[in-house]
Structures are given as C-alpha cells and as structure tokens.
Image (cartoon, rainbow, N blue to C red; front, side):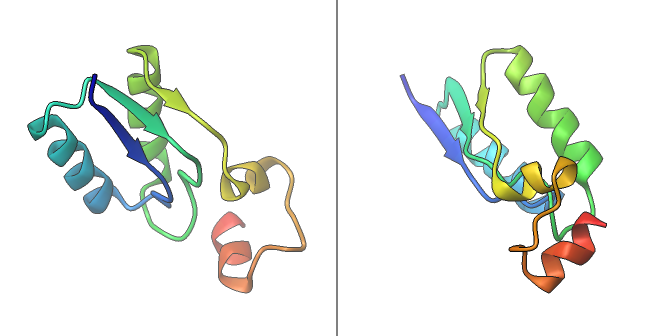
Length: 86
C-alpha cells in the first residue's frame, strides 16, 4: 500500500493541492497528515475541510503545535506564528 505522508501544510492551499494531486498520480491509497495543518497562509478553512473529508475516508491526521496553539496559545510560538494564530 502506498501511503502519502504530509506535514507542515500551514494552510497553503496551492501547495497542499499540488501534493494531493502528486500523491494521487503516484497511486497513494492512504494519507497521513503529520500536523501543522494551519498557520501562516490564507486557507485554513479549506485546508481543514479537505483534511477532515480525507479522514472520513480513512486518512490519519495528527495535531501539530500550530494546530494545538489555536485552542491553547503558547508563549513559545514565534512572532509570525502568534500573528497567524490571532
């Protein structure tokens, strides 16, 4: 089974879509998202909706520190990440 591992998407819709397309073209049968789905870029809602849809189809998604910081802001985030979280 081919598994597509993806990490540090940071709500970058264009890059994430390109990676999903690439994985599909190479026969990925399963997706594993290794965290930091949101942060920095402009499409967090689309990114999360896409990941949630894929999880509903059997993908696995882990929470990264940027994802966790949405609910529990951390002083350890860099200034750019703090602005993105806000």
